[in-house]
Amino acid sequence: MPPSLRFVVLLLFALPGPIAVADDGPLLNCVDRLASPDGAKSEFDRLPGVRYTCMELKSGRHVLVAEAGAKDLPAVLLVHGLGNNAHRDWRATVPALTPKFRVALLDLPGFGASETLAQGYSFAGLAAALQEVASQLGLRRFHLVGHSLGGAVSLYFAQQHPELIERLVLVDAAGILVKPVFVRYLLEANAAAYGMGSLDSVMGVIGPALPGGVDGLLDMLEDQSGMGRFLVDNPGLRGALFGNQVIADAALGLVEHDFTTAIRDVRAPTTIIWGGDDPVTPLRIGRVLAARMPNATLNIIAGAQHMSMNQRPAEFNTLLLQALVDPPKVKQPAPLPPASQGDVRCVDQPQMRYTGTFDTITLTGCTNARIENAWVKQVILDRSSLSLDNVTLNSADVALTSKDSNLKATGGSIAGRIAVRADASRLDLAGVSLRAKEKGVEVQRPSRIYFSVSDYDAPEYRGTAHFVWPPAVLNQAR
Image (tube, rainbow, N blue to C red):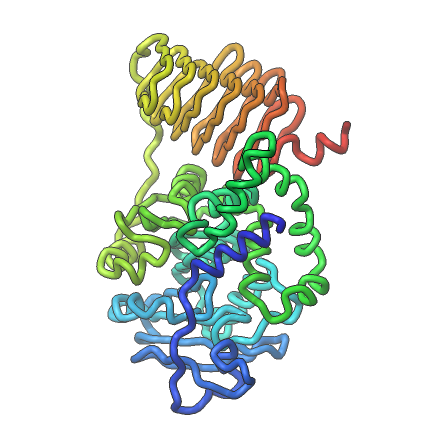
């Protein structure tokens, strides 16, 4: 099964089930279709104190739109994530906002009680539907709050329509990382939690027989995963495959989308709210967004998972109101590096931690090491595993050397004559700026190198970096 489809399966396991349906009569053209598999017109569960309309778009399709609060107050538009609960995911949020805001909600096309998009799922199509809803409601400028898939849609919308956005709030936004990294995270972190134990068992049996064990199996599947991109580019075939399975269709588009330019371009004051124990979208994504967006701050709700607005409603609502009411926070410039601690070496020691300024950090046989909030000239890895968090590597020679090692870098930069030298290693770089005078990436023995929402400036390639190395432009040149 291609990673894109495995991602869909895992998200389906992770999402809450549909809510029971009320019996007080359907709203014309907006009925909860998934709650009525026999085709009967069943009314969706209404939130108390909310005004509902079934809005017709220019395409002739209908979407369920809800409002609460006085119409002369500043406006907030709430965008839900995957799942048929749709706008009802915000049940604990609406009462906290209505004293100060006009609150608008909708069921995204194909979710809850809204009809599907006319031309298949895409971020452009979802953003166009949002824009039309806002226009019909008379929202000329508003705060935009999105959760999970809705966070990704909101990020895309804020890039496409900056003139409409007052402030942006992203809650446990899904996707963002390059597809193989996100899918691998879901498989490794969530398989047991979401009933995929049988997959674990199969991988446990097959994995050891493959070069590289379970990693080797995932690599093999990854190399054969071009079907996801093919389906995204062919909505007719995708519709034939998924039918009315909107969640699968939208999730596929999510993991295939590149948000690098949106993250770079959005200038609206942005607050990122994340569940500290989110098993669906890792906190690392929130850290990447905070590091890469020009005007963003990150708030973590300890103990919350993916549905932080319902799992920790009091904490969530406090943070959300602060994001919408308080003066926007100004991103502080990076501090000047302190005096160097010189060269340090780790040999066969687990879980070492480093912060501050160093000339060279050398790790040999050291597992689960971490360097964070640091300035380093060179990092040398041999049979080690390391996380870099907000680290600046700047060398006159090779900035990062990795042999038989695993590295995960989040934020920061890597610069040198040669930025990265990889030798039989696995490198996962997210939100990283790579700069090199002679060569950005030099591969000795075969390695796996992933770039997510990063940028790359070297003689062999210049541009955004959201791909598995080498990028297609280099493959074509060869």
